[in-house]
Length: 158
Image 1: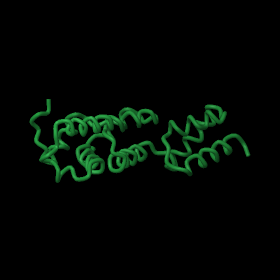
Image 2: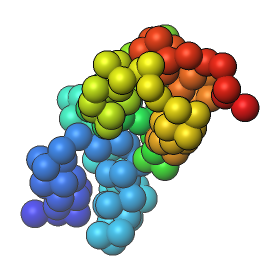
Image 3: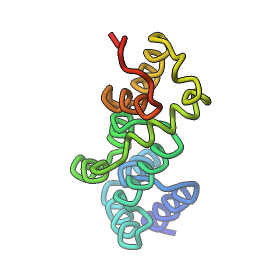
Image 4: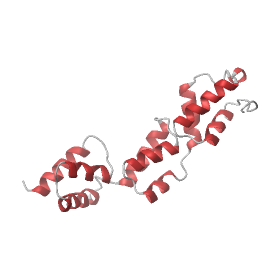
């Protein structure tokens, strides 16, 4: 088995566990000691057969992190940048994402019953809810709007 075949086998084994970005596969093959020409050849084949597709990866990652991960767009952006997603592709992927629904869902999971208790939620609890969403990468505007969806009174927010 020559170097190209070995690199292709290694890449396919690496991809068999879960989807990866182009950058992740390139990094793995480089760490395994394959030369740059071999890595380029393998990557061309993987992309031709769509084993590696950064657009598909970014879209699926965004959907999973918004729907199930309880993460905001700022956090998702940082994570995808760390996985080597092209900045233009990243912005195209994030465009039109519904961060507000994800924030509301995240609050619902974190504080079950917040809707029923909205009349009794104090300023401290509102601040905790906003801080929780901010730590997860949601914007201040999104966090406040998520609380409004529960009809939480917005006075005393200072």
